[in-house]
Structure formats: C-alpha cells, structure tokens
Length: 288
Image (cartoon, rainbow, N blue to C red):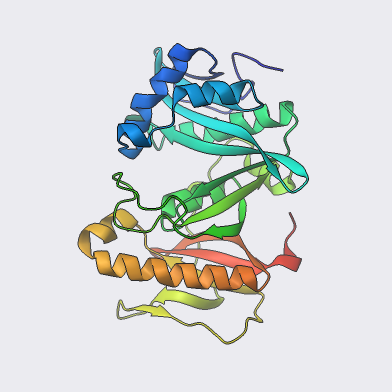
C-alpha cells in the first residue's frame, strides 16, 4: 500500500523526514541532486519521466527532505531474476552537505520496509567494488552479499567519481528477511564505525610491508575464505597514481571473478589497520 510518510523510526537528523515521491515536481528535484552527488552531466542523469513510469509499474522513489529541500533519494524498479521478482535499486544518493549523518542508512532501511510492504523479499543493486565506503556500507552496515561481477558494466564513464577506470560493478543482493539483515537494521547502528583486525585468511590481492601491490592466484581454490584488499580511497589513489589504480582494479577483477567461478561469494567487508578487505567464502557455507 502506498504511503506518503514511511514507517521508518530509526533516529534521523533533526528536521529530516523520508517520504515516497510521486509528483513530477518532486521527481524533477532529483536531477540537480544527481549532479551534486555524482558530478553527472545532463545526459548521464536518470530522467524523472522514467522514475514516474517506474512508480506505476511496481517500483518506488523515496526522498529524504530537510526544511522542504530534497537532500537524498533512492529509486527502485521491479526486476525479474529467474522465477522471482526483485526490487532493483538503481540509485541511492545523499547530497554531499548531508553525508555521514545516517541519512543514507535511513533511506535504505525505509526502502527495505517499503519493499517488504509491497511484496518484495530481495533488493539488489550494483556498486563500484573499488569504493571502500560503498563496500563497507553495503556489506557491513546493511548485511548484503555479492555473487555477480560485471566487467565494464556501463562502458566508459566521464563523471567525477568514475572517470579513469573501467565501470566494473559488484551486484549487492540484500535478503530483506535474513536474520543478520534484520539485526543490523535495529537502532542504534554503530557497526559501521568498528575497526577490526586484518583477516587471517589467504590473501589474493594485498599491499605488502614495503607498499608494493601484490597478487597471488593459486591454481585451485580450497580455503574456506580468501581476502582481497582494496584501497582506502580510490579517488585519492587515482589522483596520485592512475596506473596503480588501474592495475589494482584488474587484480581485483581477476581475483573476484575467479573465486565466484569456483563457488565462492563476497560475504563480508573488513576494515583494520588502515586496510580494507573483501572476504569471500564458499557458497555452501552461506547462511543466506
């Protein structure tokens, strides 16, 4: 059932509310927000007309507002996966002035509640696997997993976040009624700030003690888990050393796709001692 105000009750910044967006005037506001969040050009933004069509075809657009201003939104469409219908979350963004205030988390939890109320049990979306912040948010804070890797998914991109690298993407799969997902949804939500020890697992891509970028690909995979390191800030690395960033992306792509093909999935993201790690576990050990 459609609602104007979402029933999400986790703490939000004072004056911020989340509601479902239907009217074209509301949807038009997302254009400037897309440009502010991702540095997009006009031709790269998602049309409000497309969003409007999606809202009458099983999808939904949720907006976060402060003092009557749209400061964040998420946009999902109905999508078929095998014999199931998932909600495909195409975009989620928060204006730079309001980031790191829990608004993105609140938007995703509101989207989860909206999806459950509208008959969905899985939300999926893609994200850049070289972006440590997104990986931590999707895998650690929300409890999503990943089982699909897309090579250069969108082709060459020129926006501020993506220019210089192939548009590789991981597909986050969020099982909405999974016990871990439900536990992580409960406020207060502090797990995103926890710093953990580096994983004691076999490492396929990593930075050694000298600062060298290393890769170690065995002929076969038999460990329970493997670790793949990514940079703390891909934006800073691109500005400093684009060649190293490109090489790192290729190493990451090779390691993840090889493990996915061998029956593993991306199960967790760990931050510790300044390093950022994907953990990949055997698929038969998955609990979701």
